[in-house]
Length: 91
Image 1 (cartoon, helix red, strand yellow):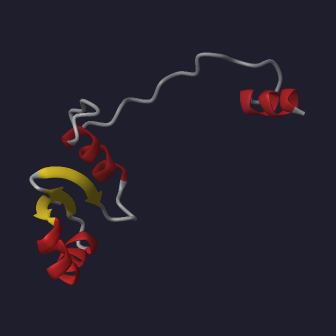
Image 2 (cartoon, one colour; image 1 turned 90 degrees about the horizontal axis):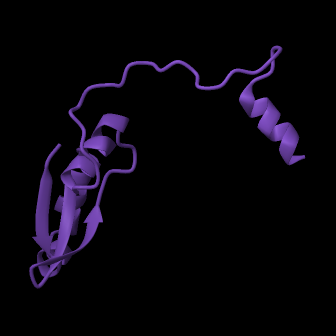
């Protein structure tokens, strides 16, 4: 996975080539007069790839490791789940 930047004119001229790169998993950032205005990303990216893109965009900090499973914060009485109780409350 890599990120490529391209100007609007170049993108229009070689759109098929850039779409092949996106299909291969790359991200294409579109520049207009040197200013980023858009991004073309693969549709079916894995969770790890999407998380890495958020890191690259500066939206999150992540060391690449999975979180350990956490114990539930709330417990219910009986065999019902919290989701069941919420759905019942909404009705």
